[in-house]
Image (cartoon, rainbow, N blue to C red; front, side, top):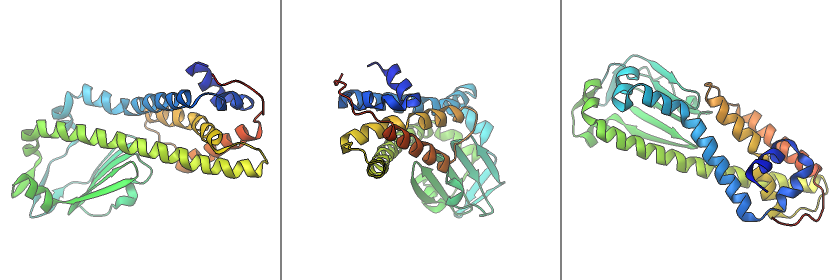
Length: 252
């Protein structure tokens, strides 16, 4: 069974999920890898487009970073919000924002009066400006100084990208595990006799529509509500298990 038929069945043909379940594990894993790569690339396209259209790191610094100064461990800057749907950057010199503002986005940064809060995937990291200045071996830091660190910023951007992808992979695996647990409960509720490895396969395919929708909507600066994603995924689990046909389709 080719990848396109797998996609079609996973999105619209609940009664044929038995064909997907009978596929060998290698084909299911390949499907998940391709789905992850496609949705990740699509999700990153707005950033890639902006990065190229503004002339790389230097152009983006000039366009998006307002005038600021960090001195004595304190940020002096006007409040600025850059919202790119799945990515949120907040410069908050008045300390009215917290890490709660980063919930619901894949990647985000808050620069408040005393520290930096970095959110990627499901993790938050913090660094004070004293720590930043110490690492740079500087007493103060302002916008004009950033242009002296273009190569370092490019490396940091690459590291951030790698970290983000790693976090997304972890989130993807965690999502499948959670979905398979929910599938086990539905399997008992619906009085089916599916085994756990079969439920894992169903969980992989049941997430297809939400993954595709999330990626496409990012292109329009829209982020799907987490509750909606959960409800959609559970609905796909329910109907795929409910309509599961115990036939003797051979593994292909």
